[in-house]
Length: 493
Image (tube, rainbow, N blue to C red; front, side, top):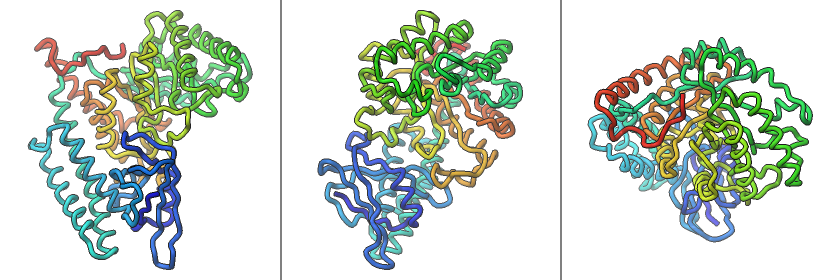
């Protein structure tokens, strides 16, 4: 058991931290564990956090943690010693931030760059505050200095991430522009939303919810999907659609989710996939095969059986749409709350698909804060993108977005100020730059959530990034193939 002193959070903040907490092993993956918030032993004392795992071992803990004026994000400690007691949660969070800045920034070899000096100066202040917190002789000073270290550490981390992204974008010479598209909101008019997105000429992602479409077994209502599909086809806007197999809870009709006989499962999935592909396969090449099969045991299947089912869906897709591009999607790429025995972390899951010869042209992830997957800061977003490069499959962000209005921030996080359309657009410019400066990220789809005004503001920011990348495309055409061009083909436009 490991005990930490919760010395800088209110009771509500501490409870939210526990609700969002993951305990991580030495490989960075979530462990089966129990995290308990213990009440103060006497009036005026702080709460205590108890971490219990099946075996005594060094672990880290992460959860939604406030960072002063810069926001509230999921943050992580370094590895904590097995059996450690009396550790300060705020000091350990500050230590984790200092580590992340140094490790990720060192990988970029950017510390000496002139564009990094503002971030480095800010980081020096964060590191000084952390040192003072560690050496503090009283709890009040320790708490104050640790809070300053966390706030300054995240601020300097984001400065570094954005400076590196902007510098890298200017140097990129891609063969073609990455996708900068829009997630369709089926309850909204495609004409209004596409116009707000500047025409969304790169593409739209049209979600297929079997639970919403299949009103009763074998009876389908495709009206809302048809409206978006027909508009996109007529406007010559490339379409990405799916998922064909969605493992998330409540993603299928209850009668389908309840199936446990494998032959009945195969028959039901085959019928659904055939119906969708017969309807839209002629106009759509980019298909999301499956979503969150690494996280959820749909139909009560173990992980190997879920991979078999994905293989089956892929084979059916390629037989009906031979030129299809196959995408596998994960909505929680940081492996949040991944404690089920049948769950597998994202990267090991993708490697398993490769071993089983599942055709995957692109890995898709969601980067959008929810109560189950709260907000990360931009350094964590950059670090995730860098780690996913190791699987050597192009990366696509099929749902990128943050709220455009206030609501739920205490459980999903916030950035700089309460959410509104201006804050959303400012975050979007930075996040899109952080993603698209990396050649293996082949595109993003912005989730406007039906807000046309906020969507227009965001796509104005996208336009500025497009101009920088377009200049790189022009340079590449003049110079011929360059080292910075992606070695793997991007999804077709």
